Each structure stands twice: as structure tokens, then as C-alpha cells.
Image (tube, rainbow, N blue to C red; front, side, top):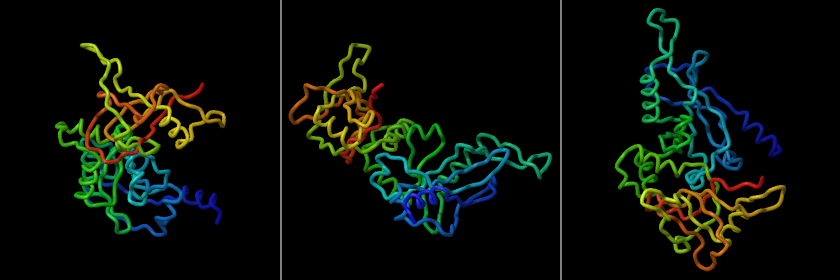
Amino acid sequence: MSNQSSVKRLRSFQRTLQPVIKLDDQAWSYNISRLPNSAELSRQGLVKSVSVVSNDERQCITLKLEQAPQNRVTSVEPLEHFILISFADFRIRCPSKTNPNVTEAGSARQSADYIIRLLQTGINLNGVHYYFYGHSNSQLKSRSCFLLAESVEEISRKVEQMGDFSKIKTVAKKAKRIGLLFSSAVMGVPLPPERCEDIPDVQSADYIFTDGCGLIAPQLAEQLVKQVNITYRNKKYMPSVFQIRYRGYKGILTYEPSMHGKILAKFRDSMRKFKGAVDHDLYVVEYSKVT
């Protein structure tokens, strides 16, 4: 079978895991025959994707395969360890009080309780149990997240290894900071911390003029252009700005032609969102375009 045919076959793969969703569901365990093997999924960069759907037309839980989002988490774990789950079209249906044979939209609280119960319980697929791992800030808005084939304790350990979040006291802020690890980004190049420098922001008493804006040396910028394959009309070009994720830093790096020597990147105080990250790869989220 040609590679193109194989990709087409995998992308058309779909199974119904659960044809009916009930308000009192307590377990989500499924056995699927002829699930594509792990090596095949990794080779094509695909991840298992589960959709939990409940609306006035249908209620079901389905499984398909889709292109794996690129971020700092999926780049270090085998893709077969992930499930990407979506509740984008989910509003629980309940039996009508006047006619038990008809369903009606449940309350927002009932829908939230169902989602929480599912994420806390996890999904068992062909004997492998997947638990809630995390989500990017954009996924939170689209009501989707990642599950990982590890124990709850191991998942907690993995998250804490990715950064020091212990000093963040509010749940919402901690979730937002952890969400940076799940933000879509392409791995650029390794960047040793000793090749970086922290610099203060330019600010007045009530305004930070350089909020989230660092500097990048030509040498590092050229490496990113090559690694990420930044082109315009089939020719490589040098962006003036790179939107990046690096360790606990978030923001942009602007091209600084005068930077030469050991230091390849300078990060502002305002760019640091957390400390203790062990991943020293520089990731590119976006970059300025030629128009």
C-alpha cells in the first residue's frame, strides 16, 4: 500500500465508542477492533481524537484520528500515549419531565458535572487507561484537552517536572501557566541557558514599554529560519519578529543585528511566567510575514 493510500485510510478511520450518552454514566471503557498500531500512527504524525457529542440531533462518543498538534508536550512523548478529547458540541440531554421518551437540554451544571466525572475517571481504550493531562489556553476556550496513558500520580509528576509552579497560589493562574506548555508551537533549536541573558524592561512608573519583547541574535535567528523552514515564494527570508516559547518565557524576540558573541537571546523580566523548566529547546509559535 502506498504512503498516500495509508494516510487516506488512517484519516478516514472512525468508530463509535458509545452510541448513547446518559446523565449517570460512570465509566468510559471501550474495546476497538483493528485500531491502527502505534508505529503507524507515529509515522504519520496522528493522534487518537475522541469527540463527546450531545445535542438535539445526536448523542454519542466517537473516535477518529487527526494530525497531532505540535507543542512542547507532544514533542517529548510518544503520540500513541495521547488522546485529544473534545467537548465542543456537548450539552447533556436529560429525559423530559413530561415525556420520558423525549430528551431535553440539561443544565450547564449537569453538563459540567458529566465532563468533570469523565476527566477524573479517564478513558480506558483497549486495556490502556488515559487520564487528564492538560490543555492550552486556546483549548480551554474550545473545550478540548489532552489525556495521557499514565497514572494520575505520574502525570502530576511530569507536569511538575516541566516547571516550578509551586509559588503560584491561584488555580486559574497555575492552569494558565501550565497551559503555555500545551500551546501550539514548532520546536526550533536547542538553546542552552548559558547562551541567554535576562535583561530588565524599559518602563516608567505606570507603563512597561517592552512588555513581552526580547531580542534575538542573527546567528540564532538564522538557525530558526533554517529549522522551521521559513520561506516566502520558495525563498527563505528573515522575519523581524519571532513569537516564542522557551522554558518559562513567553513573548516575542525581535531581530537585533548588533548582537554578536556568546549571547544568542535576551529575555525581559516581563517574559518570564514561571521558573524551573528543564526543557532547553526554543519553540516558535509564529513569526512576522512578508506581505
